[in-house]
Image (cartoon, rainbow, N blue to C red):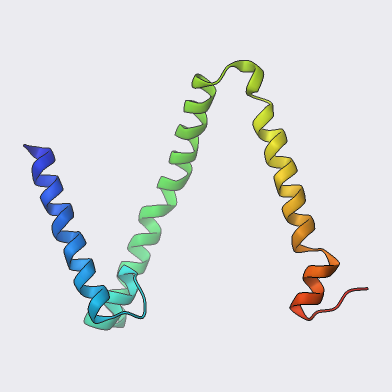
Length: 110
């Protein structure tokens, strides 16, 4: 019964956001909606509330995901993920700082 009530509440919130996005099509965040409807002070409070809500949750989700991966994966593959992540980051760094990327941005190369 509680799942049905929570589902109905979520559906009502989704319909409210759909109505807001139809009225204010420029953006889609809670901060923007509250700024437009209720003013700057309320939007400021909601913005800080969102920051305080998301700040502790993000590291907790990362920790839980890494624990889940460590438990589920065999020990042989534990070293593969940091290595492959390092390779991906290395290539992304190279792409962002390449001479072609600098030329496309207009900053010029050497």
